[in-house]
Image (cartoon, rainbow, N blue to C red; front, side, top):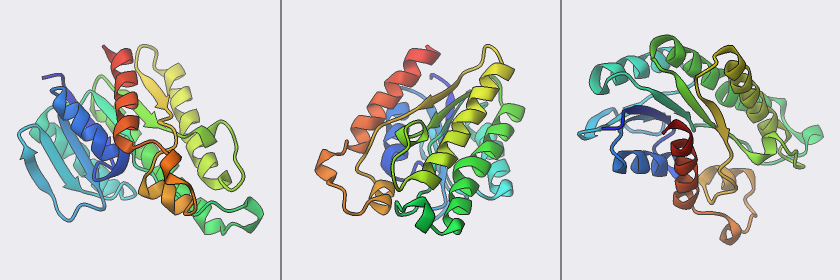
Length: 210
């Protein structure tokens, strides 16, 4: 058994594929999503699935507690969960969408990261970022800003905690529900499948932590 990993947003898309890859390679996996219909303890002997909302501090605390109790001390956190609104030019965008993006992509993720680092050791963290966090695209200003801010948090933590892993990985454009929400007219044939993107992300993580 390789260890225990917490993967957020593991009910669909990239997160679901990452859960499968970690399980296949012998990890214990704890994952949660607000889209789960209920808590499921041990779908497989090494898998814990919880219904939890990343935006709720009590839910985040429960995830950490249940993971430690049922799967053991997690050594890796993968911040995959995120939210996005339809891509819109900044001047036309509803400011509430920036609040929503920051609430999940920055504030909620940062609180989970803090809880993980306080209560789990060693605290290795991977953030699933986006190319728009470093290279602005028209219409992606709010989402890109929230992801860039989270990348900045990880960069700061890397300086504050020498010897621990704080890594941001861009999986590239994927054919996911999030991408279709942001860009309904996109040619999905040109987008990577979540399984292929997940394999690239997984290999990158393994290259660093092994």
